[in-house]
Amino acid sequence: MPRALTPFTAITWVFATLLVVAGAHKVAAPDATTAALQGARLPSDHWLVRVLGAAEVAVGLAVVVVGGTVPSAIMAVMYAGFAGFVARQAGRGEDCGCFGSQPAPATRLHVGVNAIAAVAAAAAAVAPGPSLPAAFGAAPLTGALTIGLLALAVAGVRLLLTALPSLAATTARLLEEGRA
Image (cartoon, one colour):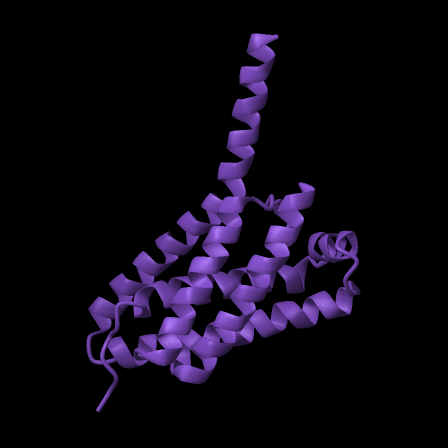
């Protein structure tokens, strides 16, 4: 009997897919993450960043394709670590290096999103839902719609973490220049 969808299933799929996207960026373009790690005085070789990125891709895919307690628990630990790292970077006003060459300023919002991802993944580890293929294998049209909505949600979260902070900084700068 397949596992039932839980309230955390969809949100976990979103953050798992975001993990795949971020990991792929680190594998393809490790420079920004390497620089962020160097700035934090952490191990920062390109090969290490690529290994981290590959691990993110593997865990994200495992959560979506396989599902279950172990992949979700690993993802929860990863996102908790990311929240800590981004909090440290935000305190220093630096980029997090999350999406390779695309700037992702470390902000409190970013810390919060990572914390939400960690909590959702932990909840999914406690009460695991099905994998995406298991949930919609018998309903391909519903599965295709779900994948489309998943892609939109991931794009939205990514914009929240990358474009929104840049827009806020630009707006603040323009308002400040207007007051001067």
